[in-house]
Image 1 (cartoon, rainbow, N blue to C red):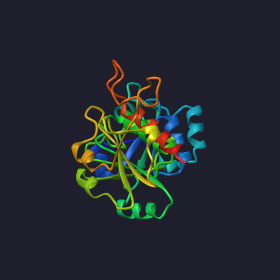
Image 2 (cartoon, rainbow, N blue to C red):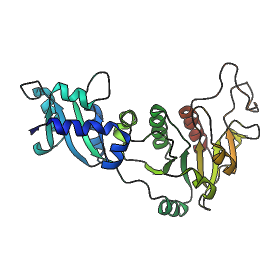
Image 3 (tube, rainbow, N blue to C red):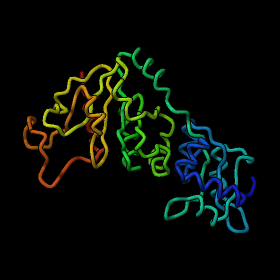
Image 4 (cartoon, one colour):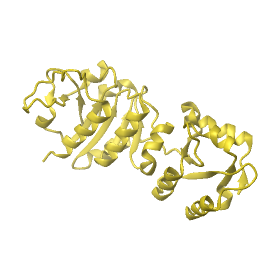
Length: 278
């Protein structure tokens, strides 16, 4: 074990900035439960564990026993003061355990789609400027639950390694492949896949009536503006989730007082619908 220096603390605290995470290829995982899940998961390379201590003494015997149970070698453990933990944390109540982990390489899109095309079926999510980290975390959790093969993010999306996203995923970190695409990528999607999208257009097909392609890319639009014009114009199939009106033939008009579904909720419903296909 070793004491966390002020320079190390300042450097690692900067990992809450997206550009720093990208440059260093690292991020912080906060909290005993999240750190334990990441270690059990085994999908990410853990560089260091940072543990809170009293100003003079080390961590409590109970906390130290939990750290030892994680199987972390002593040389990979740093002891931090409560003040340093507050600096490292981005939550109102500073955490007492942190992990410095390596961010996996982005999904190789060209090779990835070649591999997916060889499967009998595949599903890829395309997130079109999903900006809220809470929505991003929920969407990624749903994507993992429903067996999505990969997730593509446009430049305007929240960082999948944002601390709020990381906390919401914890034990699922590193399980799903995530790639970054430019906006114009949708204009030349792989021939093996069909681009579909959730949309409120009148011509959109109700979710329960969709004849899902064997290889699907499902686009999810921005929380406030929906799909971009670039993405919408590239769609081969538009899909909407009809409101409950007592009939499956309900039009895609809005329920009074509700403009639309939350992006993450809509994604979960659509993924469930996809998994019901024969």
